Amino acid sequence: MKKLLVLENGEFFTGEGFGSNKETNGEVVFNTGMTGYQEVLTDPSYYGQIVTLTYPLIGNYGINRSDNESSRPEISGLIVKEVSKSPSHWQKDKTLSEWLAEYDVPAIEGIDTRRLTKIIREYGTLRGRIVQGDADPAQVAAKLRKWSLPVDQISHVSTQSVYVTPGGGPRIVLVDFGAKQGILRECIKRGCDVVIVPYRTSAADIMKLHPDGVLLSNGPGDPKSVPDAVQMVREILGKVPLLGICLGHQLFALAAGANTVKMRFGHRGVNHPVKELDTGKFMITSQNHGYTVEKESLEGTDLEVTHLAINDGTIEGLRHKRYPAFSVQFHPEASPGPDDSQPLFDRFLAMVNQEKKEGVRLA
Image 1: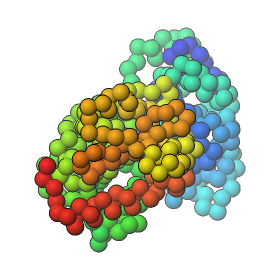
Image 2 (image 1 turned 90 degrees about the vertical axis):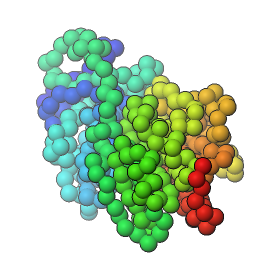
Image 3 (image 1 turned 90 degrees about the horizontal axis):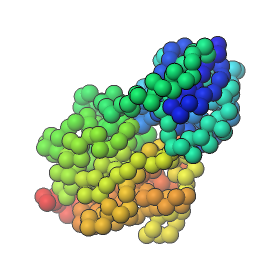
């Protein structure tokens, strides 16, 4: 079944369709991970995007019940060089194509993913559409240039109601902007009493839950599209220890007076080197973001940089100078990816326990 990927700049690629047969729009991005495709495709931060996987063979170990980061694939579409037709793994439940078809997600194989990635690196992320093979690319590109990217992605991936995973340790309120299951697993592993709340939850309602700490999750889209969340973080700061991850990091920065900007093509992969400034140590991290905190905007705020990206010098971590709060742009839960940064959860809980010992701040 012939399919096309058409980009807004008029470029198009021809390949074979698999998964769903429907057509779809999305922001076309690329991920450089060699493995972990199931975690990538179920990461809510990819909601609304057409993801290109740069590793040439995808699907060789199939789909299982253990590696999901949410209940279903969250991407709009998938682009690969080659999809495995006969995956082999003892945990395999189904093939990648069967799984995508089940959830009505279209995909294309046989595309020169290296050329596509070079185009994205040159022009930045582009709007794209997966269409039938007989479509007119020029007409599709013209419509794409008039199509606006969605701004309500978080509403599609956040929980709609409060729920609890009980534990005997500190009570952590996890604000769900599209949280990966890996974040929740790391909290549960450490015995936390976790209360997961929708992204629209106010600071007052969070404080009524008597949290020992607040964790701001990852999520899709522009952090400036959720101003109420920025205000919530602003009101939480100083009252309870706080950790922000990915989108949560950006919201923390905005709440403290800094600015965020869109990146040319973002960071998406499992091999991004980051330097921790306090120790001088390097870590390899899992990342998925298209926005970053603007360095110049930190001047005059109470934020200081704790981590930097080695490849491009962008900010990867922040700490508040007066309050027990810090954030990282990368994913310390490492799903998928290396576990170099998992001790950051221990650091957060150490901060939580220290604050409990000293008494609650009411800044």
